[in-house]
Amino acid sequence: KFGRQGVRGLNGSILVAAGVAVCGAGAHPASSFPPTSVEQQTASALVSFTERRLVVTGCTLHSKPKKRCEPSTRPLAARAVVALTPVRDDRVLTKSDPRKPMRVSLGGTPGPTSVRLVEGVWNLDWRDTGVSSKIRVDDGDDFSIGLDSTTGSCTLDDDHCRLVTDSIVRTLDVPNGHRAAR
Image (cartoon, rainbow, N blue to C red; front, side):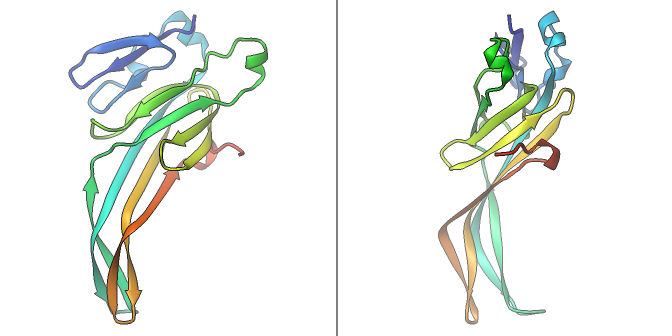
């Protein structure tokens, strides 16, 4: 009833389930799969997720133009999991809402992971971080969301820099036209 979903791995294999198309880096975008007749009737957009994880490994003091600490960082492998849950709307009353909750795992493949989401407002929960947002998906308006995390920071104490290892800063970068009211 809700169409097909294709998941194409790096080895080219395709898994089929109900709901939305998911593709990882190295795979063809979900929009390149031939749509079923139901998918042609369902308003949707391709949403891409990219995670950037950094760890601060050291701090360097710079004295000009004014004293500041500059962090040295190294990248870490992606491992985020995003839960997407549709926000209830009038379609729920008529039992015609094709949207289903889903999880997107960003670990395991370099580059963005893309999912085709049906039009509407969705809750986005970056699992195990406490970071969340509401996003708006409009028909044919593809967009990207960035998940950024930095573990560690540098602080200036008098005339030296100190590495703080227990701080974590996480941000979701959702384009302005796709942020939904909380």
